[in-house]
Length: 119
Image 1: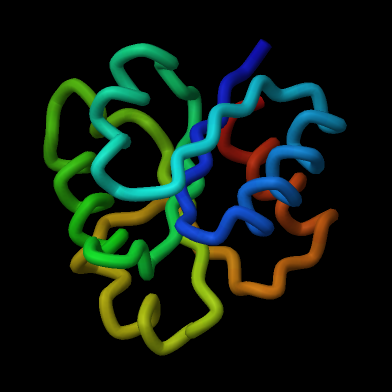
Image 2: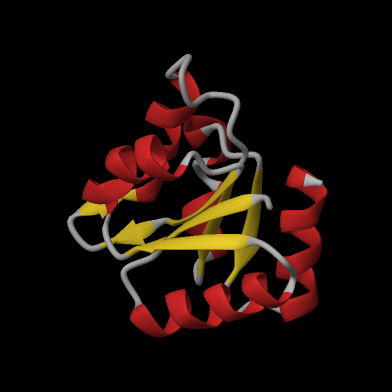
């Protein structure tokens, strides 16, 4: 079973994404802040990471860049999630993300993008 790590500081978003991806047949682990990503990657070994841009005291773009530049995690596809296109568009190359999903997201679009990167 393919694994998806979802990182978002909004519990409702985590629950919705978890339900959608579970119905799609993925094993899902949720993390509600940027500080738990490293431990979650080590213990869960995700095949893909869904990462919110605005994570309280952390910036998801900086986390993504660090993950992509690390030889141990650089191979993991990262899809950024945000309600603000401008936050992503202006920093797309900066963060090295594989893709972007805007909030509110379409359920089919979310499932299709995840499937695109890990199936």
